[in-house]
Amino acid sequence: MIAAFLVGIAIAGFPDSSATPITLAEAVRLAQVNAPSSIAAHGQVRTSKASVRSAWGSFIPSASVSAGSSRQLPSEAGRTRIDSNGNVVLLPSDPWSYNVGFSANVALFEGGRRFFDLRQAKARASAAEANEVAQSFDIALTVKQQFYAVLAQREAEAAAQAQLEQATEQRTFSIAKVRAQNATRSDSLRAEIQVRNAQNAIADAVNAIATAEAALTRTVGTPYLVTASPADTVDLPPVALDDTELRALADSNPNVIEAQKSYEAAKAAKKSSFTDYLPTITMGYSRGGSGTSAEFAPFGTGLDYNGSMRFSVAFPLFNQFQREAQVVQADVALENAEAQLRDAQLAARSGLTAALGSYRTAEQKVEAQTLTVEAATEDLRVQQRRYELGGSTLLDVLSSQAQLDQARLDLIRAKFDMRVARAQLETIVGREL
Image (tube, rainbow, N blue to C red; front, side, top):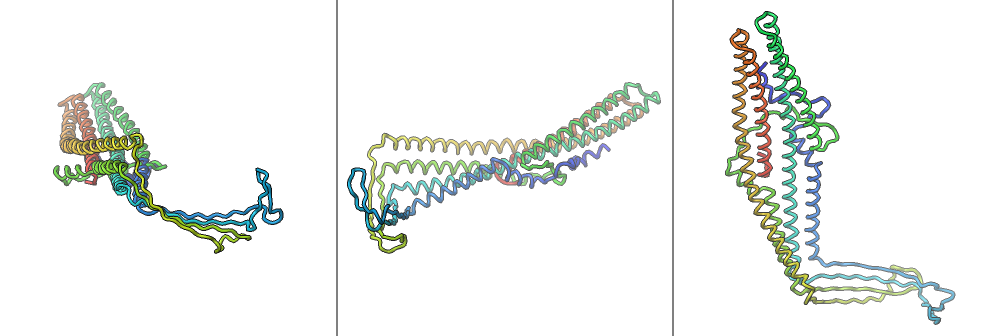
């Protein structure tokens, strides 16, 4: 009965029948689809890709076509009318008039602005894609924390159930000893208190499970209640990568890549700001036709056409220091991006050190607490046997029971900390471990 806790802690408890069990992988997938931050990150990727297409489009001439038709009234009887000045105006014999036109414009030289804008758009698109990856791992971390919280509360419920079974068995034996006048009534009362405490622990665990399931449901974004699948309660294998490999991954994690691309975009923006000091050369071409007819004939061929080609050069001599202000703003943005890149790199290394330390510590605690639970279980068995033989008091038994209960809770906490620390490592290095 006591040793069953060590075996059953990995598959402790079954989910509430009203909640739908889901695996960890499914929970992560649902959250990455439904989370507002994931949707926003995906929208940012779409927007940045559209900006890249727009930057490419600036190399293509802009073109437009136009067409129009009008009818002068009246057209037959009464072809004369009086205008606002009292003059007699003779209306044309052909009341219908038409016009068509085509125009195209392209910038031949603008100081390289289009190339810098394209480079900036590509860098921002890459930054948006890196941010989407970073958001997916942040969401996965949140999901795993909630998922592991459900598992931890189930394990706490299993520990409380084991505590209740032991307390109930101890109460039965204490009552028998009191009836045989081998113990005082105080023993049975203390045993009863232990039973009530175990029942309260179960109630607390059940409430904690419900709360954890509600939090998990909100995280994955489903309209129905979900819970952690019992199939995912098996402990994860140790991290296979060594510290050097983890540091190399952390130095190129999604957050660092995003900062690097933002820095490249800022450099392109600074170069683009200097193009305002250079002249702009543009070329334009237009061709149009116009004509009249007595009848409505929009597709007639009797139109007179003419066209023109234009070259223009523009050079702003002075624009109220706006160019200077833009250069300063671009330079400040570049300095900020450089500082953010440096901070992202340091944050990755610092976070890796903290998460790796937490994982190693929790891993050692799990191993130590597993042995502690085994030792406390054996100690309780010995104390119960001595109490049965009259070699110890009920206080000794209760003290051993309290040590075992605490050892179980410490083991649960250590396993939860190790799972979360592993998830944090995966978020920092940007890959599954």
